[in-house]
Image 1: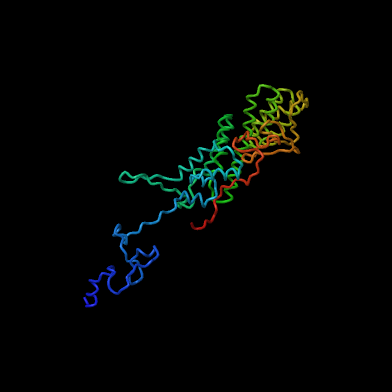
Image 2: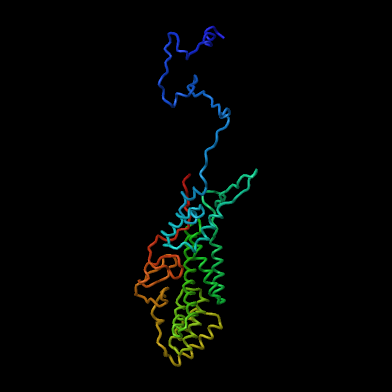
Length: 365
């Protein structure tokens, strides 16, 4: 060492003796404990972590579920993230849904299906891995697809053809409850989802009328309900079956004029040969005496929709309101009641409409 350096080794800078003024300085707390090197950097060592300069703990990332809840705008995406409250708010705003109990299984299925649990070593807990769409965690993978729900619609229609009405109603109801939890990639698919929901709801309304007819004890009310059953927008083959039933019912009570009208409607659908032959035979018999023996609350020549509460006609020109979920029609006195068809919507509520198409572009998180 140089003589100057050697002289510095024995110097006690904290002794307070001699001619040097070595009084303590009142330094800020954020620098008072640091040892600054020649380059101005902090050279002090952390004795509790002698190897801290070799490893820096990475910051905790944002869980995928939290990203979905913050960035996504579909009810299904929020449900997949476990954000049930925000998912319910979205469904209420879009469809006016107020009773979510029937949808509980859909919420749970989405939340469960959006993550996989992987085992770890050494007795550690399982690791939850997000399952995104197309291998990306930007958006969760849904549990329902359009193709799957369309297949269920066909199964419901088959049950309808077979006359298994309670089972068919259950199938169509499950479709209606599932459509709001779809995640699709285009507005065209979104329109298909809305159409699917509308078709399922139409069958639900029709089936309620038929099931009520089977429980009805008053004969004339049974006849009226059979006639109302023909005024729903069903598949042609199913429309033909409802018309054949109503035609036969009207003929039995000697309402030949109304029966003839139903025969014409049936023949316009070009039904199967057996149905067409029966309709022509009934029509020929009715034309011999075109009168009605019984007065009914039914005017086949005046267009109408069926009130889902009273199951009576709402003729054209009369005021009506609807359920925002299933679009079932009601008279104004049913305002703000729970829908009698879907049982989850509030009648007369104004809503923004169903949204199931994810946004095409997402900003980087």
